[in-house]
Length: 381
Ligand SMILES: Nc1ncnc2c1ncn2[C@@H]1O[C@H](COP(=O)(O)OP(=O)(O)OP(=O)(O)O)[C@@H](O)[C@H]1O
Ligand SMILES: [Mg+2]
Image 1 (cartoon, protein in one colour):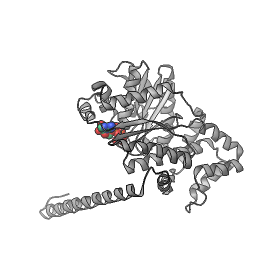
Image 2 (cartoon, helix red, strand yellow):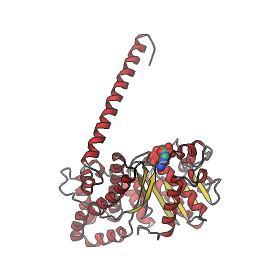
Image 3 (cartoon, rainbow, N blue to C red):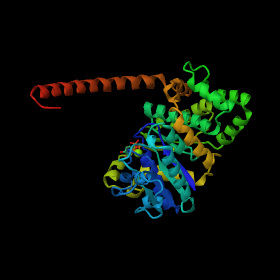
Image 4 (cartoon, helix red, strand yellow):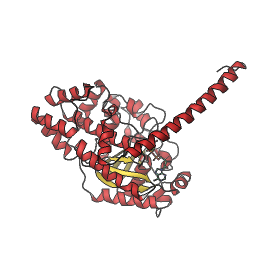
């Protein structure tokens, strides 16, 4: 069973669109597909595939992890594609208890006898449970877009995924683990160099852990999709992100392809149909089919993390503070260096964000004024 987690770092860049439409494309190619909505707390994948509001979903299962998981797997109108709805009511994926995550992973992995491809639509953000779901495959997809914030968030996600992989591989009590913890605690950032440099250090002080990491790194080839392109010149940003990842994260990214912004998607959504069914000839659908083909033709790579290590890292996770590398800002320099971002891009973004802030301030002041007036006239808040 191929597992295809779809992540992004930033919300609203097209994860659910990609997950749902790839699912349909794979099913049309004869694969037995399960599409799972793991964006707990904000799940809306059912809308993209035009599924009625789900009665049961992952939330139902999480409330009683000993219950029968098959109850929450439903058929869809697409032959060969089944669906596991999320749950908008329960708190997000980030708040899963360790036991809940373990039970969920165990049941998802158990689908392998009846499933060729399992697609996981992950929530936005870089919380460690999202990273752990991402690391269920060596080839998870990161969706990004040409906007500066989408690029930054996509890169930060990948960087955190590499750190999470280190944490999963290095056992507690080893020199490598201690080194990583020291790097994390070092607010000056001196211990924490670029990942390839950190790995050279670790190779010296703990060759055994280093080899375990290398074995996994060799199968870690996350894939990038640049979505929402408006202009052909936006396409090469993906190659520049790839360069930053190679140089600063020691990870080789596969560029799966670009998807242009397509006005037909709005009508597909309104018709409650995935666009590959609504308009298979559209630009967007053609891009999805190309990407689906590329995935099906490529080899499948798995990390060498067994279920024991995955579970182990989940337990670890409960004790660890949040991985906080994302709060450090050197990743901006790493992207500037490859040209994935330019100073001009940053300047533009700062300017437009300042405009947004001043607009919000005005709106906020206006609402405050209205509130004060209403209260002085005797309305209770
Ligand atoms: N290439 C595209 N062309 C036109 N519209 C698009 C394209 N990609 C995504 N959209 C639209 O952009 C919006 C956000 O997409 P989507 O919901 O798939 O993003 P997401 O990353 O899953 O968001 P969230 O983080 O909120 O789950 C949706 O309305 C979707 O229809
Ligand atoms: Mg989504």
